[in-house]
Length: 318
Length: 318
Image (cartoon, rainbow over all chains, first blue to last red):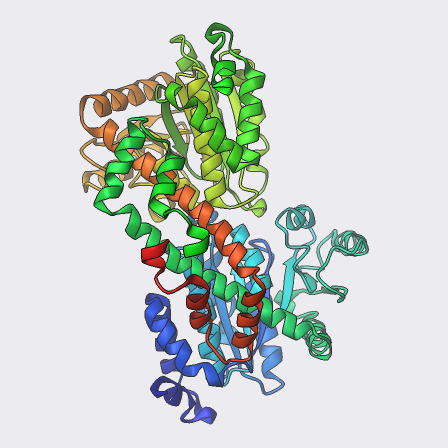
């Protein structure tokens, strides 16, 4: 209640420092995250969560910058969480983020936060969930989650956001790659960014054709929006498309289904996170070292060792 | 025993088709993998496992092609397992693999296999472990594991191989990136490939300086080898360096420590794999759906839901 009251004392003049500190605490310490999330729970559930993903270099950050400013025009507060789940080798795509979001970062009604996967993916997902709830409780109307890079985190966005925007660029076989990455199945809206580039018509046609085969979630037929983020083109249309999808979800059972999916995913990540700790503990037990020696000596197999460490009925007892 | 006898009937004329089929079965079905691995266990433990990793484009495949041919010259059989753990967006770096390994693929004493992470990372790791054992039991003397891309899988190579070779190229801040990716700590040998490019001297100097600070595993001081894989240069030196590291491990406690680490990692992956299945099952129970509804309605938090699903004493009962 203490934390919640700090977040809530003066909604008109939100305390950015408190928000930043709470997110940092939740990120650094899952037990703290639990305390924070449990204490602000009653004040959550109002923010609309938009997930934006796509390949590196497609212009996500620039587009999010413009989109956030567009949403601000309606008097709404925006939170942006940029998640870097890339391998360090994929390069500095992420480092320019702040630069590309400069306009947004100067707006007093926009809060921007980066998170990276130093630890496990489930740890990152938990920190993201906590950050969304903190922004939500602080009175933010709309949270935009940007994910960069790695496969699993990209599709995980579908279990984190209400509306998923997949950003693609016309060139370089992006659509084929998006298909392989499982992004086609999760997009509610496809933004063909840099749509002044050659190949934009083809990209839109290919996408339309693909979608006509019915490969999307639920009843909503994904919309395609052409954008040129660097010049702010198509951003109003993108915001309108998101609003249409939101109204669709709210007028159908869709919103509840998505909320259920998000909760399921959050509970799953919490379970994995806890189990990871338990497994680590078991692996470090003195008796485990003896079991490993038995495997090295081929007295038992690794499969038998895992069974020994897990107990007889893990499915009944876990 | 049936499987083992098939692998063993005629060691002089090894049955490539049986090897390929067994690896496919192990990859497709973890229960089959257990049966196969348990049945061939007595015949494993002879192959030497070399892990080769590095950023995309550094020339790993070309180098492995030449290295495999070099090892063949000593009359040894070589197995190559190329693991693609990249996001589909990182592009077709992997597709040219077979082309770059053409010479090796035409050698009757070299067996090449690709594996990709369609499912989970732990699933991929398990399939890789099984494949190593199958090649080992089939009489292969040396297994080379190549990993491409994603962070976690790259460092996992250190818990899979006896000798780890990190391949870097002189340009583009590769060393800085390798540092960030945690590759500097796992390399037993560093191959500066494309060492005819400008910056090779600087790369070697930077690397030497970094290693002089003692940031490496154990007592072995990592060696640096200059290679030009496309022209076969430095490959003899690389093979010699690997041999030196092998002898070092075998003359010290190192080999046992590595074997222990590999077993620990395999058991860990098996535990995760099993637990993943259990968690999925729990999440799909009818009563779990009711719990999710309670979370959506904010009657309980996701943290409480996870605790309910996991039972009271997961650490004692798992």
